[in-house]
Length: 133
Image 1 (cartoon, rainbow, N blue to C red):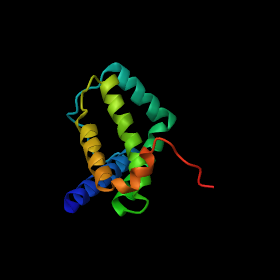
Image 2 (image 1 turned 30 degrees about the horizontal axis):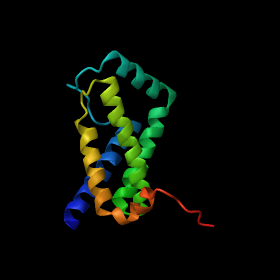
Image 3 (image 1 turned 90 degrees about the vertical axis):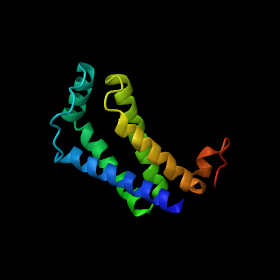
Image 4 (image 1 turned 30 degrees about the vertical axis):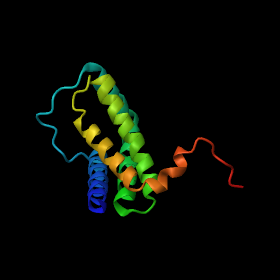
């Protein structure tokens, strides 16, 4: 089971590092990709022109690197879960589910990593938090 979790962690980290780098400096050709609906194109255009996509790409690189390295792994997972949530919402609400498979794959990989490192996340699932001071 440890090998499966490690493979999931490496795949998840690599996916986000590679696609985050592609967001900053596109190197993956998009030829043959289906055309997005108008609302999705508008949203994507806004994110590109305002620089918001560069912020998202930077968070993807940071989160992916943290997950890959294992240093501050819970922080990396939290960052990537927020990114995955946004990816899934984009594809569900703006493209009607078109090209949602990568988002589902990252979600499954994240759940596997969270399960494997569940002791590190135990505090996030407490109903009542206590002050540490």
